[in-house]
Image (cartoon, rainbow, N blue to C red; front, top):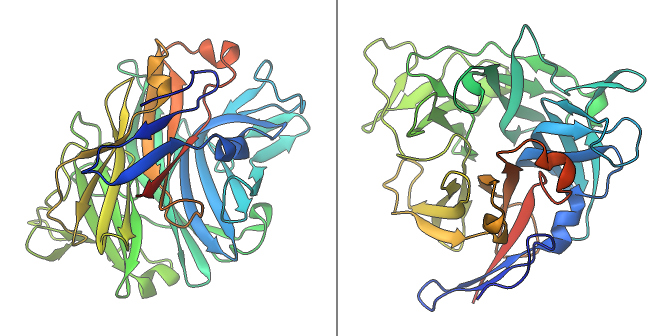
Length: 356
């Protein structure tokens, strides 16, 4: 069953017996991103556990109202922003948002645009006392949705326990690859002394996902040139001209998450499926490299009923508390004017899923 309206965004789904879970639109958690007087909308919503009940959120294009009136009228859209959540349960936590203010009333992205390129967030991970963040390089185009993800960058923060304005950030030298794989656009995991990164092949209609890795030691040193790729049979160096990485997930999205799910004893991938009106789906695997199961629908948001809706960027957040599985997705419209007339639109939305 489904109950609620688009304006209230309340939904409950009673899953079939064989699925074994109950799904709820988590409106109490949605308010985490809707209480700030200056940050008035965004998408992306990658999260990273910083420790001590501090969660880092990374957002893409974000509305900032420098007047503090909590209005998008007269607000500025910047390419990225971030927030620190204090408290592991998003329904009771508080969030502090961050971007750059170059002059009074003049804002720009936390990771500023450079030479006609913008930076949208990829995923991130805490590595010892450092924080590794991935960014997607975005350029405008005259076709499609008006943008294209063309490259990736990485930033190492050496003092992530300090407030973001005080971060010591080092932009790392990131190796090119010949397969147009945007490293870090998907899930990031730590296992057995390695940092593993899922990244989508872009541009392209299928968004196949490839797996790369580095040693944690190299990451701590800020060295990313020793990147290795999964070939389906083993690992090979990025410098190997004869290397041929093989996708571990096919027909995915640019942005997905992969995490270890203790209830499964294996790994869970989360994404959206559909263009416009979409559902949140999942695939599972006993191993980082696969094989992966067929896609299973987890949740279909109530907002699919809005005629111009874009639902995208489905993600899981295993370090949050309040349910067995916590997801978010982004809401947008094919008509940009809806940003100003639909005040529920263009905020990340929470879903909580509990096992029966």
